[in-house]
Image (cartoon, rainbow, N blue to C red):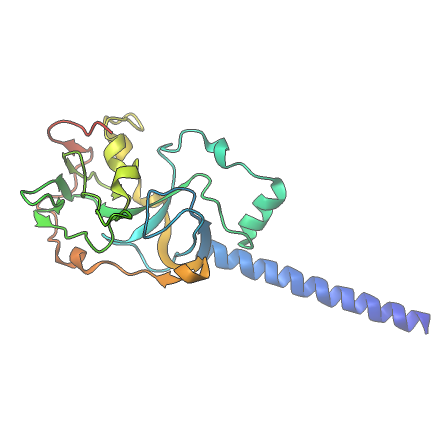
Length: 248
């Protein structure tokens, strides 16, 4: 009787271990290849994404202009990577996809320009243009409690995005240290490359806000980006910046 009970307990534990290991493997594969959840740590994407929102990022469909993307901080925009440090057990849960990544070493912004695009602020109506096409960004730019919407940019700029790079901006333009604010920085020995994250650094595209539940929403590419023409010339190897750099 005791032997049968022991075999029963042992069998149960073995089956449980197999189920747990299988679930962990499935979760890890899901995180690595399909979906990853991130915790929003700042207000730079308000009100599209607010502080402490949990957003699921999909890694299947390639990003395009207008998409909100998470990308690795290869250019060290965050400065001190230890400010998002957490316990080893939390690292393990994040790796397995069982806990949202608090964005340590990652940022989330909207892609405004891709390789070869000329991105300019601003036209006579105060709109950012991409390859000469004006962007109506009223659908997503931050609006304060008084109903006043952020301008597309308080600072003028005129750039051509180099090969393999992107130009990104936060939706809360007055609170976002995005590509505009890093144009004076050098990277990889290239002058002014610091404002252009690598295309390869993109982890994935924001697909849905999971939490808080009252903020649940899906994401799609704004229609205004569908009318942007192709770049007039092949993407340059180095950034092309005309005029003064933004003072942010």
